[in-house]
Amino acid sequence: MDKAITVPLRRASRSWKKYLRQYTVLFLGAFIASIGLEIFLVPNEIIDGGVVGLSIMAGAITGQEYGIFLVLFNIPFLYLGYKHIGKDFVMATTVAIVFLAIWTAYFKPVPQLTDDLFLAAIFGGIIDGIGVGMIMRAGGSLDGTEIVAIIADKKSAFSVGEIVMFINLFIFTAAGFLFDWERAMYSIVAFSAISKTIDIVLKGLDESYSAMIVTSAPDEIGKALMEEMGRGITILYGEGGYRKEQKKIICVVITRLEIGRVKDIVLDCDESAFITFNLVNDVVGGRFKKGGH
Image (cartoon, rainbow, N blue to C red; front, side, top):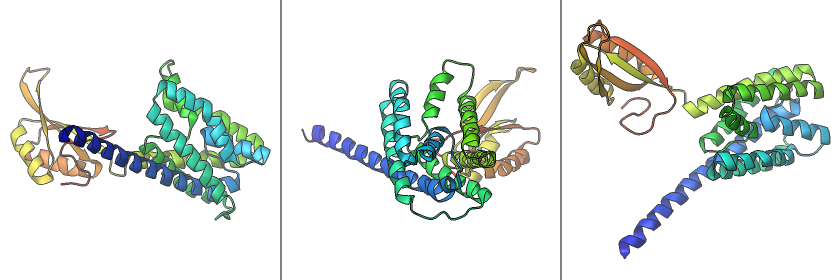
């Protein structure tokens, strides 16, 4: 009886902690993104891409808070997301959008920090990108066009990135007619800064790489990698295509900063070793920790 009661309580406790962390990150991400938008980009008539950009333009045309349009424009996309992606994503996205609408209204009276368009585009883009990246790490989004792109990607020959770029091309062109072409070009600069910053937030500054090492001294190299770098390794068994020799192949995941060290360790043990490095999008579990031991 006690065990039957205790286990669900523990699961519920973990679930509440998970949601508390998630929605805290969504709250902070929306807060940071609104600073980039309201204190740098929007006062200088520089827009973001996607639904946020459309909402900013709708707000400029009507004189209303663009946070209202951000909510309204995303409703059909949220429905599509619920049908094709999942309930958790839609919940997180809805919360992020509402938080952003509230924060942008809050920061509306705050004076802009600069009227230099280049500085506004760069710093506004970076700050906005940090906020959006945090929201995406928490499982949400602010841009309904990405939902359309994900769905269209399954039914067309174009990638998600290509579809998003195509949609934003029309949005920035519209911004050129609404504001002016100089601001439209600075909007593209801001969008580039946002995109790059999101990548950094999602992937981190220490990118991870998978190293595949084909060597005649696998035991010596494997031991050195484990002892000197504190990395777990995996031994794969392969066969040479020409001589048909049985070979051991070492696989290890490292950070970008450790590539040179791996080369030194491997070549010190076997000068004829063959090494390939491949970028890894994400690493979960195992003995891998960014930054070393």
